Amino acid sequence: MGKKVLFLRVLLLALPLVAETVPTAGKEVGVYELKRGNFSVKFTHYGARMVSLVLPDRNGNLADIVLGYDTVDKYKNDSAYFGAIVGRVANRIGGAQFTLNGEHYKLVANERNNTLHGGRRGFSDVVWTVKSYEPDSYITFTYDSYDGEQGFPGDLSVSVTFLLIETNKLGIKMEAKALKKATPVNLALHTYWNLGGHNSGNILSHEIQLFASRITPVDSQLIPTGQISDIKGSAYDFLQPRDIGSQINKLPAGYDINYVLDGHGHEHLNKVAVLREKMSGREMELWSNQVGVQFYTGNYLDNVKGKGGFVYSNHSGLCLETQGFPDSVNHPNFPSQIINPGETYKHVMIFRFTA
Ligand SMILES: *[C@@H]1O[C@H](CO)[C@@H](O)[C@H](O)[C@H]1NC(C)=O
Ligand SMILES: *[C@@H]1O[C@H](CO)[C@@H](O)[C@H](O)[C@H]1NC(C)=O
Ligand SMILES: *[C@@H]1O[C@H](CO)[C@@H](O)[C@H](O)[C@H]1NC(C)=O
Ligand SMILES: *[C@@H]1O[C@H](CO)[C@@H](O)[C@H](O)[C@H]1NC(C)=O
Figure (cartoon, rainbow, N blue to C red):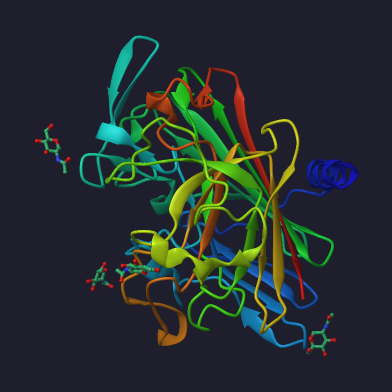
């Protein structure tokens, strides 16, 4: 509890203290680095994407532990959402539609008849503005989403800040303010992790612990059925740490499911997951204020040519996307994602890396 509160305070208090500098780069697509010692994270404002994260292993050897491409241009033709901030509503909305305050909204469908990660041109595929940038500390991206964008209601003012905390933590604060109309909002960071290095092979021997006893089961199109199911003792159960690959063959295609986090969301930061890679000794802890986390084992990576020509395939990386539950707009029993005019959505993630 003390630790959680401390992380949150550090993140929230640190922001107003640093001076704002607005680079002259304007809307050009570029790369921005946050660096402290041997810990370096790079971003681009195309999709507010995290394009690399380099840090030492237990012997001091550096590796880039996130999947991606060598050039910003390649992200423009990416269908894996490498490192992106996805939205306006991350994950799937069944039938690409919903009703809110008596109004029916038809969205752009981009996966069969459903909307995935905000539509054909979601927040992962727009150019964000660099609002402020301090290379040894933080970067803030903003995006003004318009009424009707991909079918969503109302103007929405979005900001995402990535912040270095000490020498081994990365904080992320996502905010979105609805201006004139109520709208669903669900942002997520879609980074693919491989703690052995992006080019080290698959993540099946990573050990993971997920602090969740339930999932929201899905149909054949990965749309939630609306049930919330207990997973204790099943192949989904990672309450005790174990290798990701240990029971993956019991599933039809690997993990791609929303876990209902045991701690309650919104007010406090809760521990979401601990990920370990034994060869490098790298460990990543994730804390968040969200109610769910999509655990995805890169099941659809299909020989994607990535950094240094390395080819990513099934399970080359894994995603831990903290967020609200998928398709919440169509399931009244799920926690609401509706942000009313004047309200601000807030999503905090803290990653702590050790080796
Ligand atoms: C960075 O890594 C190198 C090589 O392992 C090491 O010699 C150096 O001390 C490290 N620097 C910092 C600031 O940790
Ligand atoms: C874009 O991606 C598709 C596969 O998703 C690939 O076939 C095509 O060659 C890519 N285009 C460029 C310009 O890289
Ligand atoms: C999409 O919707 C149309 C019309 O409702 C339906 O005929 C079709 O089967 C649906 N396709 C899929 C893949 O669900
Ligand atoms: C990916 O691996 C899983 C098992 O972990 C398997 O069920 C699935 O068919 C594989 N997908 C592809 C496209 O090979």
